[in-house]
Amino acid sequence: MENSDRRLTALHPSLVGTWDNAEGRWTPLNGWQQASPAVYFHETVIDLSGYSRESLTFFPNSVGIQDPGIYTLTVATVLPEHEQKAIQVLDIITSVPMDIDAVAQLQLPFPNNTGPGMLGSDYDFTTILYGLYRFFTSNVNIPYPGYQQLERSQRFDSGEPTAVDRLYCYRIVGTLQQDLVDGDTLGIPACRQLVAGVMGEESELVYMQRLRRGYELANQV
Image 1 (cartoon, one colour):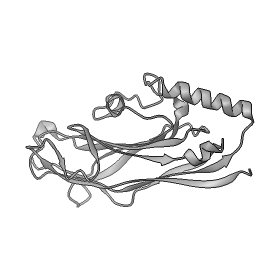
Image 2 (tube, one colour; image 1 turned 60 degrees about the vertical axis):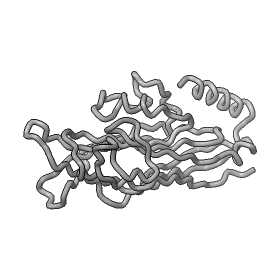
Image 3 (cartoon, helix red, strand yellow; image 1 turned 180 degrees about the vertical axis):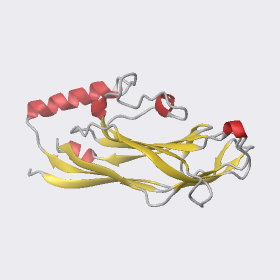
């Protein structure tokens, strides 16, 4: 079989919510899940089982996201000593499933500055096909309620080839704020994660070694 170009996509819905004190969360969640009061995530998968049955390997060559829209966080009651308002966003596509609580403890909501695949993480760098960290914070000079401006963006992916039968796609959001009350709002735009690459054949020995390594890594976490 000749090598063939593929563009894989994963879709994540928007999270546009209002704080509900009684529930202790933003609502409605619109398909998102709550990992902690300040951390929310959406997950989906890209099915590669048809390719894996043909013993094909996926070689990524470009990755990215599309998230048209703005990030907002409005907090009605903010004490002078509690003025911080910020949003952290992790976009991840990986060949092994992730423990959201473990990832959140590394990076969100108050960062230990240790991302997945870095020293101190349980995740191997090679399993992360795409990883993007972004930090947004308030800009009072922009006259839009709760507007959050991008301050830092950093990739942490390996782009390694993979022969797994599915890719796990995550969008993880952490908010930094205090004094949430009913009526506070959060806005996270919908997102499309993209991975373009080539499906191709490897020698039997290399392919079997890749399968074995993938199995070992999947059972380490």
